Image (cartoon, rainbow, N blue to C red):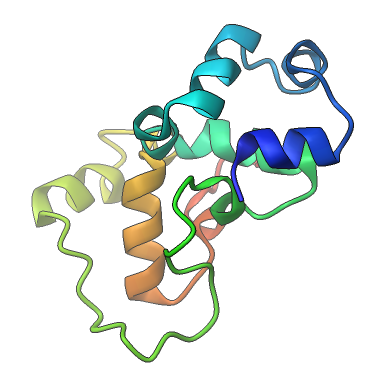
Length: 123
């Protein structure tokens, strides 16, 4: 669906969404207009936006053809994310809130869970 459609459906301007989430409206504009930037949004940022827009974080992923939760028959259980990258989050060398949305999507698909489940920091 994407950020713009969800924001407009909620009747919010970029400035209003900025006020609700603390995400700068110029950054929000970039996420709405550049799919590559939206895919690399931090999971913590995505969770704040999803909460304000009353949606799932996966709804903010710009590509329509990706897994959106639930059981997927095509999941092999492999996220194709290097073990070293996963290890950084497991050992807290990097906060999970700074996981890219693209990474969270791949891990959540492999583990059959919601990406927000990775957040333990009070989101």
